[in-house]
Image (cartoon, rainbow, N blue to C red; front, side, top):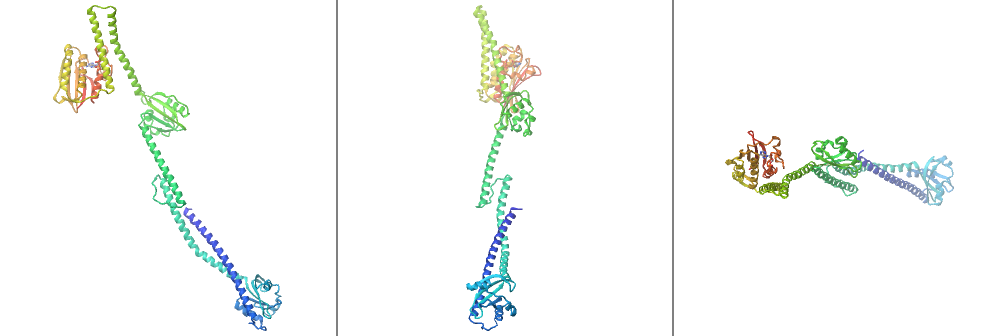
Length: 577
Ligand code: ADP
């Protein structure tokens, strides 16, 4: 049953009950009034007859019974004329013998009452007529008549009264359609408002929280709707805030390099960010599943089990499942209120940097130890037992050479440190490659001549200009040419050339020396890396190519080493133009 039908039925029932009650009260009141009027009429009629008799309007010797009949016909009621001794002298319902046979009426209640009061009205059963009658009796001053009594059968009274009741019923029937129409109208108005409120509620539950333009009204229903509306709006605001917070958190988590995995109190994966997905080799489907099904790493599972139990779990260093060369630290911690959170931190780079640092320290110590040992040896020899001047001079020269080597080493180390710290900035300017090559050639001409090597420089016009830092470009070329001189045998050919390519210029230094074993071609740029320590020149630091690579990269260029098919090494510096 719809709300509207209920309201309609209820208001109709109320209207019907009110109408019924009102009809009954009015009918009762009308009946009472009607009865009063009937009694009044009987009394008045009795009084009128009594008055007529007292004024001797009826002769004393008249046939009183016939008179009673005549008058009764006029009154449309039963008329009884009673003598002072109680004898009935005239009655409209009994004639002749029947009248004579009528019993004495002295003790009739109405007659008795009429004796004491002005007019008596009594309702009782009539033995004469054999039915219930309403009597009105009054006294009169006629010579033969003492009492006049007018009576009406109660059925007639009831009939009149019933008619009044019937009228009330007709009134009820006439009022009923109005009541129905009013009930229908009021239920329609109320249900219309309720439907509007229900429509707003439906709109809210569908997720659309825009406030409806509908005016809820000022009564209690409107107040309830407004309060609910405000609650929904407040909830919507909080929901908005929550989803914004969530989006922010998701953005943070997905942007993190650390892997994060969150479990609920039942051990189901609530959240796993991209980094953790990659580290643990799981995908988006992991969410909602139990961690034991998702995580294949027994150590991590054990940590999570401990964390879910509320206990502390020591961070563990583990190899990555996907790539054994990578190492990460897993830390699991319990979450207040149940659940656990796992954070995976990739420490491969940290470990590698640590290793590089250790290697570097070992290399530097090693590089320093050789000259220091030599210097110490010669110094001790000089101190212990001063040799002859020629020998002394030779010792001192060796000491000077080792000192120079240490100086070079320290200078190279400092330069690398400056480059690492990005303290060396490049100041680019248009450079003439030909000029730089000539300057390098001039710097190293003594060494070239000493080794009877030939150097060929080739700079075509289109490759003459590059945009670079001239001093650094000079260092680059000089370093490569120095290596070519040092690692090629005497009488070797060295070629320095510039080649124009698409958007770049290649500076190529090649020699006709032994070349570099293919496995070492990429490693020669590492710090302290030497192809063959026994073959390396005594003055080399092993840092030259590392510095060259740094300088080339500062220019946004690249550096590569290769072997020439006809023998010898070739270093190519590619600079963007
Ligand atoms: P170094 O100070 O020892 O020359 P570099 O960094 O300049 O250090 O060179 C690293 C290593 O590369 C050298 O020890 C050498 O073995 C190899 N190398 C460099 N240039 C040449 C070349 N032109 N021919 C052969 N080997 C070379």
